[in-house]
Amino acid sequence: MHLSSTLAAAVALPLASAQLNQLAQKAGKLYFGTATDTGELTNAEYVSILTNTKEFGQLTPANGMKWQFIEPENGVFNFTEGEIVSNLAAKDKQLLRCHNLVWHSQLAPWVTATTWDKANLTAMLREHVYREASHWRGQCYAWDVVNEGLNEDGTYRSDVFYDTLGDEYFKIAFEEAARADPGAKLYYNDYNIESPGPKSEGAKRIVRLIQDAGLRIDGVGLQSHFIVGETPTIDQQISNMRGFTDLGVDVAITELDIRLQLPADAENLAQQSVDYRTSVGACMQVKRCVGVTVWDFYDPFSWVPGVFAGFGDATLYFDNFTKHPAYNGVVEALTNNTKCKPRPSKMLKRSKPLIV
Ligand SMILES: *[C@@H]1O[C@H](CO)[C@@H](O)[C@H](O)[C@H]1NC(C)=O
Ligand SMILES: *[C@@H]1O[C@H](CO)[C@@H](O)[C@H](O)[C@H]1NC(C)=O
Ligand SMILES: *[C@@H]1O[C@H](CO)[C@@H](O)[C@H](O)[C@H]1NC(C)=O
Ligand SMILES: *[C@@H]1O[C@H](CO)[C@@H](O)[C@H](O)[C@H]1NC(C)=O
Image 1 (cartoon, helix red, strand yellow):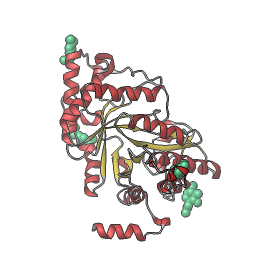
Image 2: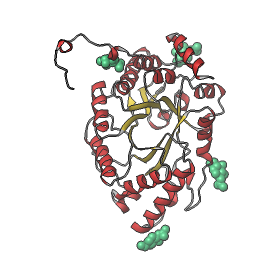
Image 3: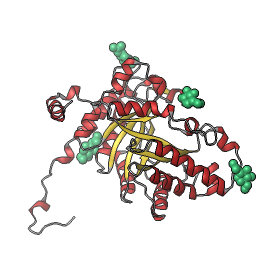
């Protein structure tokens, strides 16, 4: 489609049929996106929504770029599973968030079964990060370079990398990712860092660790796996985001879902709508919050019921493909124009220019 007709359609479209990526971009964000997975791509109705770039302008492979698929044996690389989603994104010109290079979980079993010292783990880690990131060079808008490297109290998580290399492993991973793909935005990504507190402070420490080493880190990913009625307030989410952007990095909401205690009813669905509006609304008010990614958009494909007993319906679409009330909550946040309205203020009448 020509750009001019895209713009014309955007202007002419009634709000009721406007879609999430279109609204996010209109409001100045880079994308509204979703995670997806290879096993889901045989569902035609799902795929028609997934590939509609008015709805989703960005894809994240939920699993296919994880270590267990990419390097299943020492030195043996297999990019097939990750390419399924990266090729889909390329076909429809959707941005790609690549996920992830280093994580304690979903590792190939040989990594933890091997005896390492500092020298040979460093060499192996460099090789893994460089080979994977260079494979997708030029295709990733962003890479989650290190995923979930923190405990809840903000200290570093014990795993094969930290236990052998200490915090040096963060620097190794960011250095190799930058060398492998100079154009990709390099992120640290974690959960429970969406409001101020010790874990969020830990993530800031990681940002400074990379920066102080003279290396590049471009962003912090706020996973945002929330529970209906228990999400941080909009003010907490905004001030937390600004804590990161004050360090000179972007933020993004990278894995948003808000699970409810089943069964769904009018009340918990209404609260879920408020909660989605709150998180997306926080991103809208922070300039360097570049975009929002939901961790899949269709309830039957959500990871939630398999992991949190008694919880579900965490996404924006029910199993019959009707939209949750939360979809409208997201639309409300994306179209909240009140922040643009100048408020009458005594300060405007000052004769001297006000320096802010
Ligand atoms: C590579 O990965 C794909 C997808 O997981 C799998 O089907 C294929 O068998 C793998 N190739 C090899 C040589 O193991
Ligand atoms: C790494 O080095 C240690 C000795 O320091 C050795 O025991 C171990 O087998 C080595 N691992 C690999 C994979 O080469
Ligand atoms: C809408 O914008 C106003 C003004 O910036 C803000 O106070 C409010 O929290 C926003 N609402 C949502 C849902 O984002
Ligand atoms: C779709 O599912 C939702 C949630 O179960 C239900 O409220 C709605 O009535 C269903 N819509 C149709 C058209 O079946």
